[in-house]
Length: 429
Image (cartoon, rainbow, N blue to C red; front, side):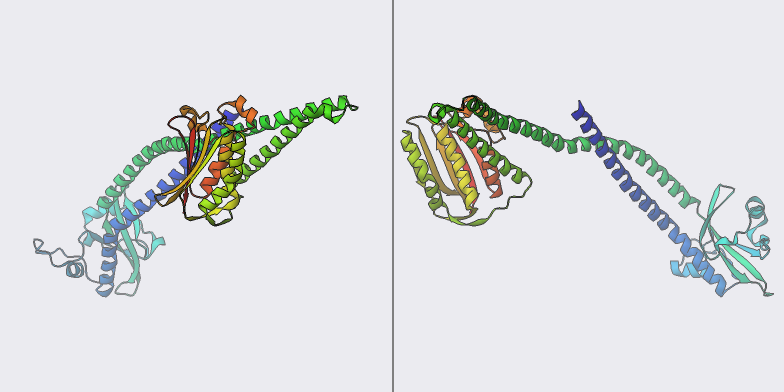
């Protein structure tokens, strides 16, 4: 229950972080798009206002005159110069803030729209948005000038932007709708991503918990045996060693088992933390393998088992000699442990697809096909009772897989045609 609560809290955090990230990205994207749309839509109007201002400064008496031949428009640059945009309205203000060109702009237009309009001097020489009666939108440019008497006046150039504003309003409405949809999708995506992100964490948590539990069990068993045997020895301090030989031998055996277990655990812990660095060097593959197999041939002969070699890999490989030796020892130890009298153990090497192939096969008890996918898991033992008898703790093949992976290779296990198993290792040249 506690574990599930932790997982839920962490998943909620991931979900919130993802949602915030999506929201920030989309908000920035929306602001940029709206800004670009506004700038693009207003750019032509702003150019018209600035051009008209320059014309009025150069020709103060000039006002926009409708073109008499509207059916045939001159080029844009010439039209802009000789025939200013008829949408532009020119307001002349006195320094007291009174419109002094009512006749030029039309009394009807003035009475309908400009009668209550006041002069705002805060944005001189800055193109600004404004709205009349909150219905009609304009952009205007206000600048100072002087009349014929030398008195200061103001000219305000206004251009209607209702069409542009309608497009912007519709676009903003579209952005808002898309934002709502995007938020809903973001919540869904954040939930799915948080679950995906929690997958490896939960898997690692379970693996770690399983590892700690199995390690504790494996450590506790030999320690318990050693403790019991030593306590038994203490109860009879006058006994001779020869009479307690079995107890001492068992304690030593469990001590060796404990030492090997701690060594394997340390190897895997360093592997997980990426602390272990390989010291690679060039190695003659067949010569090295033959040297490692030599003592195992004698052991197999003493156990009435047949050990054969078929080495056909006359190449050198770049590998860590210590780790490669450890790999072979793990595979050969397993082969010896799980074979009986008159069984055979073989080591074969060859080159395939520019890779060095090492096969260690035996005719022993074999591995059930449904269990082969678990064989490289830590502490996995197909037959725990038998593994206990042979001293297995289920870490050897995990270490073997790590060694092969560190050499950029691959390891797999197969059933032999008749009986037994074959471990196939692929290593780059």
